[in-house]
Length: 436
Image (cartoon, rainbow, N blue to C red; front, side, top):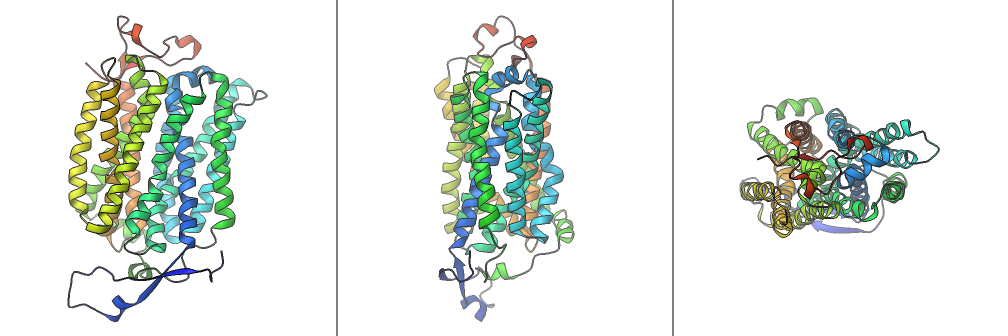
C-alpha cells in the first residue's frame, strides 16, 4: 500500500503522572493509518490458521491413531511439537521482531505456516507409503510450530507501532484472540467432519486454505514494518537492544512473578486443549462433546478477553483485573476437573469450562499490556514473548506429567468409554486422567 493513503488524524496525549512535565510533545498531533487494519487482519488470519493446524487432531485423537496407524502418544506429539519448537524459535522470533522488523517476521511466519500445512495434505496421499505418512505429517506440523512464536509475538509489536494509545489494548486483544479463535474452529470442525478416518484428507485440505490465503496476503500486502509517522510518543522512542533488554527483564522481580503465573495458566490451557478428548472419552463423552467443550473454552475466553480489552482501555486497572480473573479461572478449573470424573454431567461440565475460558483468557490482554508497561523501555516483543515461552515450557511439563500419571481405566468402568481400547489397531488407549 502507498504511503500517501488516506489517514485518520488523532490528537494523542501520552500518559504521564507528573503534572510538572507537560511539554509541547504532549500536544502534538499524531496520525494513525488505515492500513493498520489490513495488517491486523493478516496477523489475525495467520494466527487463526496456525492455531487450527496445532489443534487439528486433539478432538479426533482416536480416529487419527487408526488412520495413521500410530499410538495416542504419537498423536499427542503433534501438539507437543508446538510447545517444544516455541522455546528456541521463541527467542529467535523475539530477536527478529526487535531487530529486523515486523514485516519480515510476518512474511517468514506465513511461509512456514503455509508449507507446513501443505505437507500435512501431502501426508494423506495414497501414493505415499504408510511408513512415511506420519513422518511427513509431523514434519509439516513442526514447520507450522516454528511459525507460531512469530505470529503470537506480533500483536504487542503491531499495537505499539501502528495504533494510538487508546486503541492498543483493543488491537492487542483482537490480534491475540485470533489464536484461540482458530482453536475453537478446529474443536468444532474436526469432529464434525471426521466421522471416520477417510475424512481426514478432506479436513487437512480445508485447513490449508487460510494458510495459503494468509501467505499471499502477507507477501504481497504487508509492505512496511512501521507507519510513515508514529501514532504515539512512545512509538517514536527506541527500545533497548535485545540482549540488554533480556538482562533487564531477568532483574525485574515483578515481571518474573507475572511470567511464572501467566505461564502456568497458559501451560494448563495448552495441556487441556491437547488432552481434552482423552480426558473426557473414558467417562462416556464422545468426540463431538469434547470438541464442543474445547470450543466453549475458547468462546467464553474470546468474549471475556474482548470485554477486558475494552475495560482496560478505559480504566487501566490492569492489576485488579489480573488478580480477580486469576482467582475465578482457578475456581472454574477445579470445578471442571471434579465434574469430568462423572458421567452424564454435560451441562455442568460445559458451564464450568466456559467460565474457565472466560476468566482465564481475560488475563491475556491484561498480562501482555502489563508486561510491556512494567519492563519499559524493553522491546514489546521481548517482554510479551518471554511470557509465551514460559507458558509453552510449562505446557510441555504438564502434558508429559499428565500422561505419566494417567492410569488404565478399570474394566468395570470401561463399558461407558467412548474411545477404543484395542491397541493392536492403533486406536487410542483409554486412560483415566482425572485421578481418584
